[in-house]
Image (cartoon, rainbow, N blue to C red; front, side, top):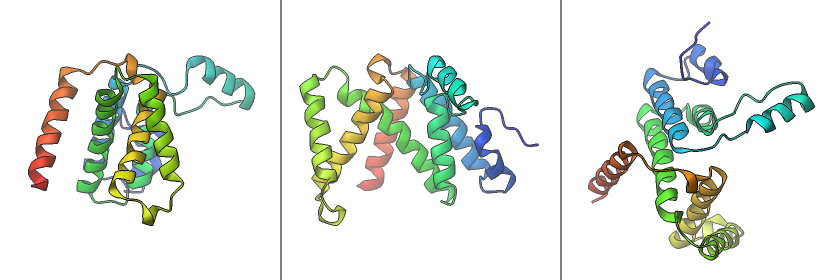
Length: 176
């Protein structure tokens, strides 16, 4: 049986079927390591896992935020090219750091206004949304990451700060 250290067991079948190239696997390993480094909390606490196991007879397999993002990206985007797949992983990295930079130290009122604006705009037909409205939805998603992952308790490592700055520079040079 194929086992790749750091790759979630739920993705094993995809590896065996050849759905994840070596580049995609490396991107997923880096994604999981980065998310678990940034997020100060588990997605499912030990207490919640024990309660779920008692209730359903099985312990959840997706415990960390790294598990969550790795399995979501791996299973949801495996059919993209290696380059697109790596870009998706980079976007998750960028979004998590952005959420920390945007929301850390902001007031509850600011966060509530972002949340409300995102909810209102989500009610609009997607074809009719302006770019600004789409950005409001994205900002709402970043706020959700920030709150659910408790990124207010996280600190940005020098490694992640350097990566972020490099990503911004690369993206800006690609655009213009």
